[in-house]
Length: 362
Ligand code: AMP
Ligand code: MG
Image 1 (cartoon, protein in one colour):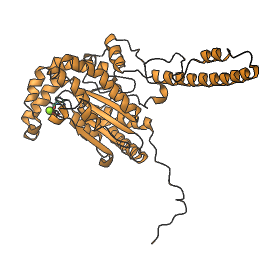
Image 2: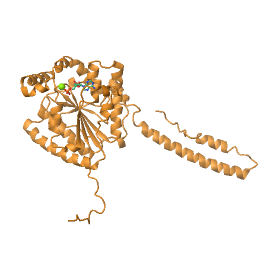
Image 3: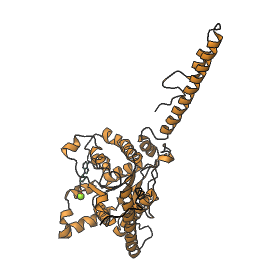
Image 4: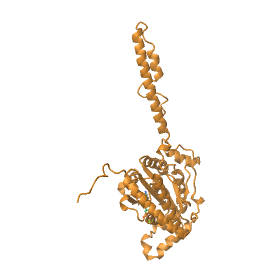
């Protein structure tokens, strides 16, 4: 983005106008003075306009021209890329204890997080607390829906068997289905592949008043796509910045974004895959392709580490949830969603005027 350097886009610099005006004809003093006054007024107007323009530019400069800056900052481990100005900052809540939020602009590694962590909870307490969090979510969702002004997008990513389906089922139990949309993203269709990679996600972003849930998301396009080499490296590499831009667009349009990475260990995945094989009621969930994907565990880890580092921004940070223990995972996610909704502070719209004296006819 270029700065204006105090120049008015529509006219010459204020100083120049004055210079020209003062070169009036000496024989026409009165006329000359009038011209001078007019020129002075014009110069003042131009200066005012230029100052306004500069202020506007400065405001725009508060936002990174391209959010690729965050991806680059993460690679360099700087944590210093430009941030959104406070007045446009979404209202985010601190993640629940136990969750590790990736510091924007820093290098992050999943290896640093213990997948067994419980956030200091015990199982019985967590179950009771989950019921309370669900109630909070339910009550706040009603207000968000009634307010019809903003939205919440909750993104879930994980390795296969990581628990995305189970978390969604547990945490959103009891919310009004009318105010909630859950989307599960699979291998893109031919139609979707004919569009830009964000097309299908943008079309499903939650509208005003809604909670949208992405079970897998636009991150697949830098995860499975990268690991399986479905597009050339230069294509997936530029996607981190594009994803940051996309999320910034949603944020500035009134969507608060919560991104959860459900973190399980390799041993836990083995146990879960075995459980699916052993229990006939879970056979439908067993996809033999998961065994092939498991062989790429390390490649997925590298891809996850990069996505979490490059796409954790101040406006849409990544939250890493230790997810080996389902009961702890559910509570951590539910609490963070409830706290975020509370920070958004949705309100019922004011009653229409004249309601006080109204009577419903028989
Ligand atoms: P599941 O969520 O287990 O039903 O599986 C969905 C499958 O779709 C997974 O294997 C994902 O890796 C795959 N998938 C989702 N999004 C994409 C994408 N953008 N490109 C390629 N594969 C995808
Ligand atoms: Mg699967």
